[in-house]
Amino acid sequence: MSSAVSALYEPLIARDLGAVQKAVREFRNDATSEELFLAVARFAVLSYAPSQHAKHAVLAALSTWELREEAGDLWDDLITECAYYAAASRQPWSEPPILTPPDVGQSAPADINELRAACEAQDRLRAERWLARRLDDSCLGDDLLTVAGEDLSDLGHKLIMTRAALKLVPILGDPGKYVTLRMAIWEMTAYRGEARTAVDRDLDGLIARCVAENGSLESAHAVFLFDAALGDGEGAAVRGNAAPPVYRLGRDLGAALKAHAVSKRLRARFPQADVDGFVAAVHHNLEHGPSLEDWSFA
Image 1 (cartoon, rainbow, N blue to C red):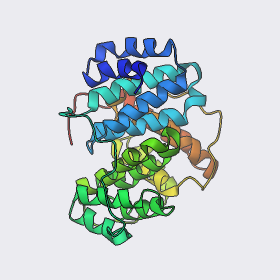
Image 2 (cartoon, rainbow, N blue to C red; image 1 turned 135 degrees about the vertical axis):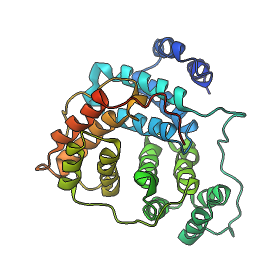
Image 3 (cartoon, rainbow, N blue to C red; image 1 turned 90 degrees about the vertical axis):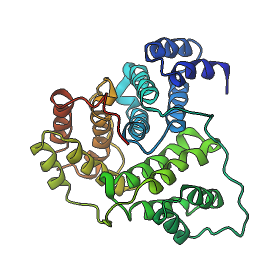
């Protein structure tokens, strides 16, 4: 880790939130906005835990990358808010996060049923060994998404986080591939819910519910789950959308920011859908709903 990145991370690790903006500004003296994003996004990944704020700090970072064109001159400000959110939401580290995969032999179980069994038992270490065994397998992503989609509890976050992790790998680079994909493993093994594997594919109905509920978190997340289930190959993102908001992301778990990122893809795939109504509803929740900044929950 470079000295510049170490200096940036110092207030984030210490949760010295008042020093985050200054640290970002000093880092940018000798680095590009993209280098700043990569440093902050990697910190969010390293800080990931299957808690609501920590996982949404990662999702907000991904959305910030996807909205870099729309953000324009405000992109640094968005990245700064991601840094603030990641620092505020991370759990205490008793020791530095482990960055390397566990040692596994070629005889270690590696089929999809082994991952299912690890998730059923909520055995995180077993699932980590599975991931290490499969790390260079071209079918790894398909198996992760399949198993993640078999438990849509907690608003579908297993599938949402798995899709996000797979998107982040090419952005953050192969050296951090294991740590990035480990987020999906941790999410899948952290909790078990009632079996529900069917994603609601009625986008018009999902948006209508979100509008009726003034952008409630649950109704917005149903649209986010729809987007995660679509995948990357079902419509390129539309360019030139409205600039995303810059705000303290913990207020709504980054929902308004994510709504802007998701809307780019939905407009391309479903041009007749009321995507603007969806974004407006989520903004309404940000402006008028209760703030979740001080809501510490798993």
